[in-house]
Image 1 (tube, helix red, strand yellow):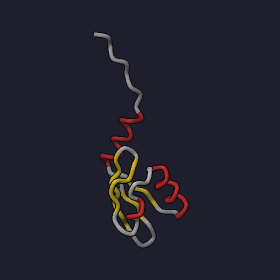
Image 2 (cartoon, one colour):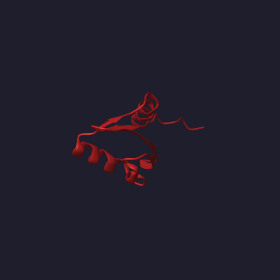
Image 3 (spheres, helix red, strand yellow):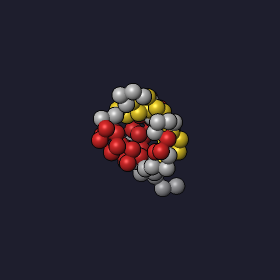
Image 4 (cartoon, one colour):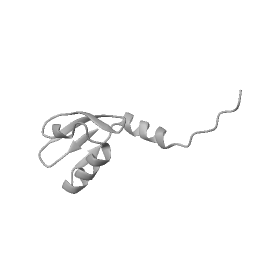
Length: 71
């Protein structure tokens, strides 16, 4: 995930909906829940960009789970 601001582009590493790694100038976001990051980005008009792998992961998480047949 990347955050693009007016004078910076920063990559974040997110695990289990929590920021586990963030570079300057947003290193203060380490430990934040992803929803809090999104709220701040909306407030400051920063853009969030996701990689193709992250988009695929979100799509899999949102897809309905098919019931497994009983053994």
